[in-house]
Image 1 (cartoon, rainbow, N blue to C red):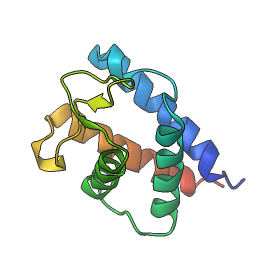
Image 2: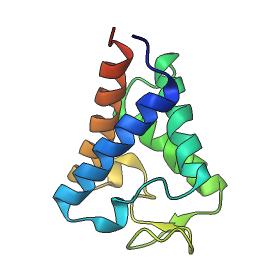
Image 3: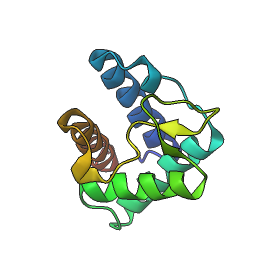
Length: 116
């Protein structure tokens, strides 16, 4: 069975929400907040599929620049109305648990791409 990019994005987003809840970060635990978020995750899955993203930091940097291009800025909590996000930092400046989130995303996507 070959999963579509959208199916993999939905699955990885569900894992991300669960991880956010475990961390007590309800501001990061929502469903798809915007069409941009949904599309960015699908495009990121496609980039992993095509070998354009191979490391956690690369996935984060792509996410970071897509959000900056859409007008998002750093803020202490995620706020879709104000377009603020606490992870709008270079990968190396993220707390360890947020770097793990990016590793978890990439590992999940790679695993699902190998599913038969």
